[in-house]
Length: 289
Image (cartoon, rainbow, N blue to C red):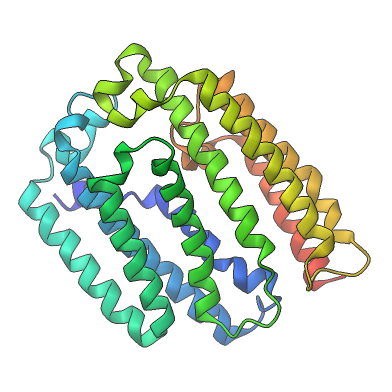
């Protein structure tokens, strides 16, 4: 049962919570020990609250998951994790996370609570509304970035990063929906009701719009944000962003992947190399130039 619970908590999804470190890195406080430890603690707590969301979401979707070709193997849907045990674990995670978050930073606790309530609303109602479902997913990523801001004494964190994060998460969200429709074909709506509100041509248009605006917004950030080097060296990171966006589009349209973006991050080697090169370049420009 413990193994089933850990699987339901989705440890692989914890990679999404690295966006909490955005404020630390881009505000040039990565080597501030106190700020780093506070952000690391915030990351751990966000992993717990996001895991509670996955547990409650699986409880709500148990019948639909049993009809899905892949999700039927999830612990709750398959019966490996009893629903009662899942309820107890989910409630315990929420109580622990909210309680500790207050002592870390009241502002961080407010973000955690709002994130949880938003996702409860998503699981209950919002995930059935086309476009709104992806907007809520995007809001979750933006909240992760803002959570990192509440944990440290921010000096010159650029609001451009909120814009880029919003657009990037919309890009990933619409890509995920496209991959789901491509996988499930004509039975998509029976597995996820909201998919009836999308078509592949419509999603391709959405993806084209948000991918282009993401590149433009990130490019504007690299030379207009208040804390980037005056020599515009941050523009050197633009090619890596362009490649990762194009690579993701290739994977969802040619390789028919993308139903789980975190799996691409953890398994696609070219994508990983591009992200490592981007991260290394950012660190070199911000901290060693």
